[in-house]
Amino acid sequence: MAEKTVEVKMKTGLQARQAALFVQEANKFTSDVFLKKEERQVNAKSIMGVMSLAIARGSSVTLIAEGNDEEQAIETLTALVEKEN
Image 1 (cartoon, one colour):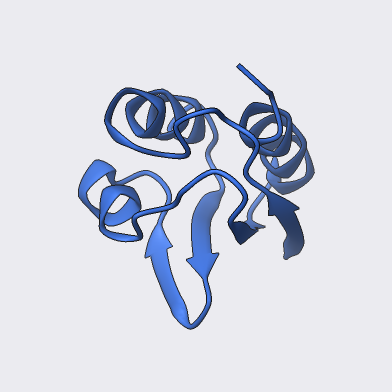
Image 2 (cartoon, rainbow, N blue to C red):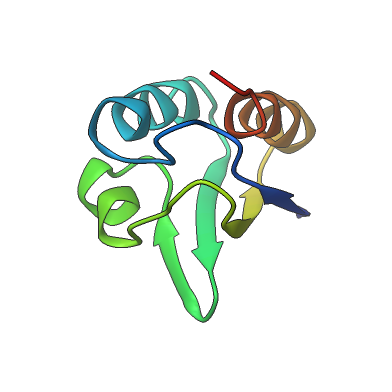
């Protein structure tokens, strides 16, 4: 299992369009991928789960992946949420 805590730097956080892009990217991996904010953890491959966390810019979240491509999943998703746009 791989785990990494990152700061969300996307201008709008993980809301609507950005959340959809995040979920699309997460679904490219065979590993189970989760997103954790404070005490809530959701499936990162679920748009409803990601949206339910209401992740704003500047929030700290933990990416968790478990499977064959867990390291690549964490690396790719970290780059996505840390991207300032």
